[in-house]
Length: 398
Image 1: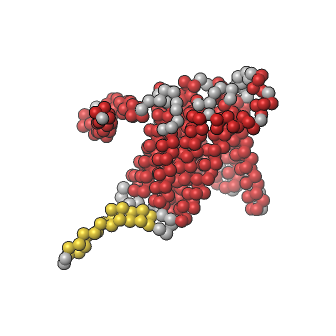
Image 2: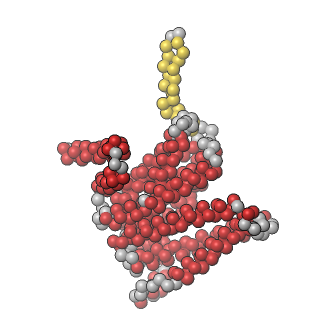
């Protein structure tokens, strides 16, 4: 509502700095608080349920806000800026209610020795680096945040500029990903508590990096009839994978810290992950500009004397594809770092995959009464299960 654009922009930047600065402190206090309250064996179920309701409310309110911004002139609001102002006022009011509810949550009693001035020294920030396993976990999360944010912020730009999709379609695809994200949270919460966060993270991380590689096939070599179905499939797969990644990355950081000493561990981990996540889009933007006018292709050419040549593109990479390939490679390195992290209760990710296939097959069998449709729906799972069994047989023979 400030008429001077320069003053308004300055106020906006200051406001964002205050918001994210205090938000980082609040998030650190919240995570350390929850580590002291919630038993480690229930972290997956608790945070999956919490994130499910957060995602559900976010989807509903996003649609309501979009409707308000499109119909503000019919609601007696004088300008679009005032419509935004009412939305921000609603967010402020909800924040006041949230702070009031937070004040009612009990705080565990802190032993006197942890409240001494020694706990406030910078020496406490060195403790996470002395813990060998936690240090490996921090390196993995930093690499993963860098890989995920290297390409993810540019998906919308890619769809708008290269694929020439309308904004409404891009928003619809984002909502599709959020719905898949919300619906799969409880699934990953159950498996992370039953097995381990590391196992679920490996499985979801493999799906996510595969999606990064899959974006290169959206225009291979040009936009084709399967581009939109492939983009929809990628959004659903990334929503499914992101649900497990967001849940388990937070839980493993909490689980590997001890009670009453979580604050310095979570603070250092948050700083490293935030620096990696903030640096990645800058590097990604630079790579996108560097490869904007570059391409790499392999063309197969068949020549016959007196007949027209037959040629087709066997391999093609152009501008944005290089960014997706780079993010894919960094993601593979991050998953390699995850293998070095130790967590109690870790099992082979193939066991989790088999259980997911069994649960899915039960749902599909009960959902359809037609044998042909059931067989068609179960065919990918059966093929994947046969591949896993064949690999296990070969390992036992070796």
